[in-house]
Image (tube, rainbow, N blue to C red):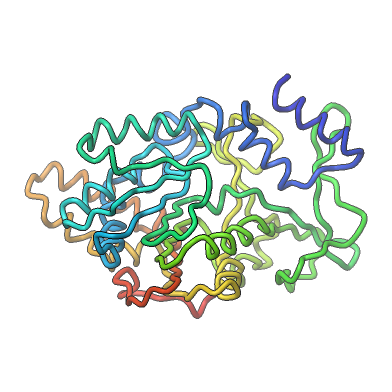
Length: 364
């Protein structure tokens, strides 16, 4: 049985369409065939997409500088979904140079294949620090230190909704005529106190991510005092629900090609939706977090001195190569403005250097 048959049987047993969040959950996280559980190359040149840590070590070095503000020798770092392990290695290398290493660097990773890849990366790059890295399967209680979630929220299964017949309805996934199809539920969508778009345009489609919002609440409950850094592709509510974003933010990535069709290459392509940072910020405040900053990735990295690493490189060829990497991270046409950084804190008073040049909290 393959993943398509598993989803088809789930719909048949359900006797009605399943929510897109359930479809996305099975496609990405099924224990045997899910995209993030199977042994496929996902990150980098030979995978399906490139993340900031895969683009340049300078991304992790800058993030380490931000972490160093709250590292006191007795606290830890927790990273969600550490990918290839590149970011772990970058952060630990730079924190070691700054003499600000954490006691432990926890990685919450569900994929056994990625765990092995992360271990290999650290063993090759930083064998002397491999003992401080600990893999866990659930949120630790009483955590103190820094929490990092880089491109995590956009991979959390989301619901899709459509405006029709003077109301919003949830779009489910049905199986008809030997293929998967979108099908709206018959009852209007219950948003559960989450703000819906003001747009009243027939056919307007967007996404709501209840799981990401619930994750923020769970995170608050599991930490004692911590700085939380959320880095992801997304925007504030006004831009997220803009009428020109008529078909929502759903994107699929297969061998570096983007599409809007989640019903092909099931289990072999990444499925994401952009992050509504206003929803995340609203829940963070409600849970008890203090918002510490919100900026574009470009201005966050510039605030943390990414240009200083470039200027410090004496080898001209290496400097040229680094300059190309920096452009990918900060130019608006690349990752610079589409990715944002939202910082939250619990029981931690600190003015973060990453938001010296820009703070867009008024846009949330």
